Length: 209
Ligand code: DX5
Ligand code: ZN
Image (cartoon, rainbow, N blue to C red; front, side, top):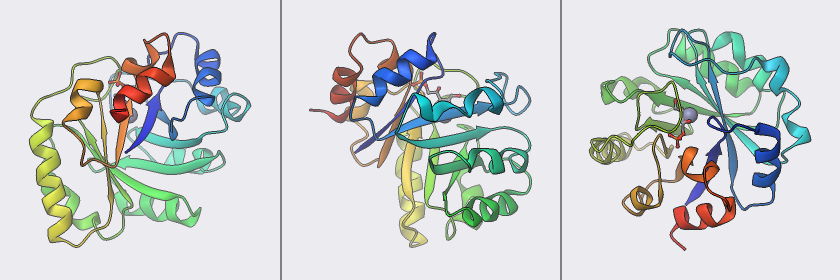
């Protein structure tokens, strides 16, 4: 099980990124919010583009924005493994094609109340499905229990469509919830890791060892 750490609730991003860099976290999850697609708003790219000074981890970029096409070129210049766009956006296919043109893995995410069948048209072209287990917009929220059932349904959907996309889950993940998500490929966790004194210990607990 891979772990991707979100620094959305960090009060000292550069210091926390340095601390995460010496853990065995697999990715840094970069939440990008425009204040339109979701309520929250994050730092502009010009402030984030020096992230490589603080982390050598690969980035898992989550675009919670109305117009993802405007953001992809910038985030593609970083040490980026995945760029994920939302299925509720317009121009999803164009965004996925643009991500692919950079050789970056393509992800698609859906909000907790979005019909999972909306994923179907994209299943043969995405590398990752990012299941939101909170209403996106801020970190530190409580995991929505109905997400367990959605993970099962999405797993079945992938199987039925012979898709090899990875499954990632994002929002409210802690060690207790992680125990019930053994069949997920990537756990995204923010507040649970960042609020701990020892980031590596929190990550061990998420992985269940
Ligand atoms: C929610 C974000 C998540 C969130 C994860 O809008 O997409 O990535 O920050 O953080 P926690 O684990 O604090 O819910
Ligand atoms: Zn996220």
